[in-house]
Length: 422
Ligand SMILES: [Zn+2]
Image 1 (tube, protein in one colour):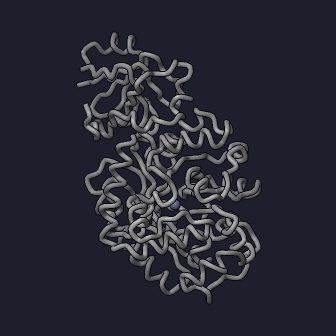
Image 2 (image 1 turned 135 degrees about the vertical axis):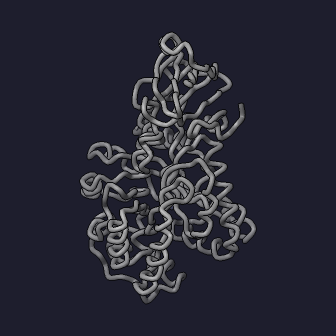
Image 3 (image 1 turned 135 degrees about the horizontal axis):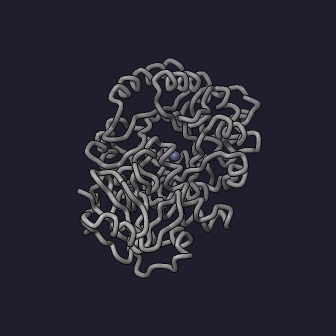
């Protein structure tokens, strides 16, 4: 039995948008994408679902977030820590203070709320980072795909060995729901060199994906390069690491991570704001994907990722919202609209659409299922119903404008409308 989904506009992402488009699905797979007229004539026996004045396109991919922190704004308000931190390191201290006051039992409902918010805004795959591992049960029976990265940080090798042994046991489970389990070493300033090498070696042997916050702030660069700055003066004493400040690495955070074996095509690098041309070359050579989180970068005042440099050297870019500890929503639609404005044309609407779909899907190993509309993929798509459709030739710019998130009216994942608004 085949079903033909029709929509006034159809955006396959990897090929040109189609006016009066159709998507033919048979046995849970896409078998045809094209003009309504031609598909209707060729498959006259197919059941028809006509979405009318709507836009049909792939689900979005949120390649970096921490859904366990979805209730963070409430936690911060309740703890009296609601004020905006003045610097990047102040923000880290703020997050640590708030997290210390939260009962770990609250992480699971917070994660469940994040999953619901992601689905409601048309997200079909996710690169999620988890610090409280028992909360992973929230993913059981959810239709989201992608990676769930178990987060580790620390500077003491003995504790590190213990943590890795525990993670090794969890990795035997392979998946949380449909998400493949991976490892997220937190950042080059919160994991020791020896530990980082050990983690990457472990990830390679176990063939699990990794994700790392890298080159996010100037403070990170001064700490890694010179062992100086607010990370040494404020962060390390705050967490009791004052005796564990490493010697200066005399290299950039990207070069430092490369030397630890941490640049690889199976690893996501997140932020990549404070990089130079040599760093971008290192990432390109390794085949790494960079996940940009523009709203988080703006909120924390760390600068803008050099997207033109990445384009020039061929580093694929994906998009992430990061957590509600540093941005206002978990909607990738909102992230695209913000990025379009913030990068002032340095990212075109079609580049942003690719970042938010196919590039993220490839980086999270789900491109055989979703990320574009193409014969062979699974039945994964979303439908936007705006109050008024834009002109056809203005479609991609419209998709990168504010307001799209609330227009998501259906999200088909594995052939089921998981929002069930229709
Ligand atoms: Zn993050």
